[in-house]
Each structure stands twice: as C-alpha cells, then as structure tokens.
Image 1: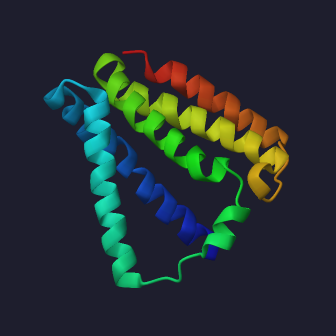
Image 2: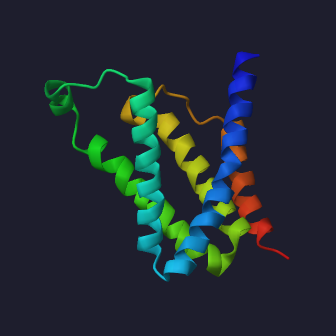
Image 3: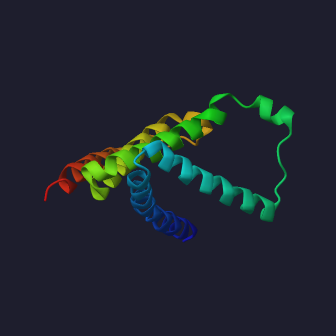
Amino acid sequence: MKTAVFIMIAFLVGGLFPIQGAINSHLGKFFNNPLQASFISFTCAILLLSFLLLCIRPDFPNFEQLFKLKWYYFVGGGVCGVSFVTMFIVLTPIIGIANATTAFIAGELIMSVLLDHFGVFGLEIHHISMPRFIGCLFLFAGLIMIQKP
C-alpha cells in the first residue's frame, strides 16, 4: 500500500513535466533564446530552493564532507538539468509537446532500467527482467505510435 501511494505521488509529479516543458518552451520563444529561458527557469528554481532551505533549516555539510564527494556529483546534475531543460525548450516547438515528452520519458525510463541493472552511483540493483525488457520495448513502440496522427 505504501509503495502504491509513492507511485501515485510520482505519477502526479510526473504530470508537471509537460507543463514545465510548455512553459519553458514559451519562455524560449519569448526570449528567442533557449539558454536565456533555461537561465530564467533555473534562477526561479534556485530562489525557490533557497526559500525552502531557509524555512526547513537543514544541517549543511561541512567542507570535509564536501571534499569526499566525487566531482561528478557536483556537475552531473547541473549539466544534466541544463541539457534537459534547454533541449526541451528547443525541441518542443519543433516536434510538439507530446512527442518531446514521450521521447524524454522513454529515454529516461530505458536509462533508468540500465542504471538499476548495474547499480550505478550506489543505487540498489534491480536486474533487467523479461517484463522490464518488454516494458522498454513497449515504451519504444509508444514513442513511435505517439508520432502518428
């Protein structure tokens, strides 16, 4: 039951994905530059995160803890985030919100299955099973089918 609740929360939050894409795509058209639109998006995100951190007041790691982290933990998320948001801004007006969202989700889920299988970045290992493999095939089939009028 607990897992079902978390899956429903993830499903609902996932619904924000195309909304974010549509809004950011409009920003890209407004500024006529996807990087400026990404900058606005990330600036707003930083402001919101700063506000939330001020409200919650978690303990921050010290420098010794930070220096123990590998370099890719600092740049990986940012590089992925900027790539993701900027390409969504670029691609949405060209291929449409449904095609862009479907392609991104299919890519995300297939990569997620691979990351789970190999336990990358310390993730718990969940091996690729036949149902997961078939699910990936269906995702790819869905990506192709969603493009048909």
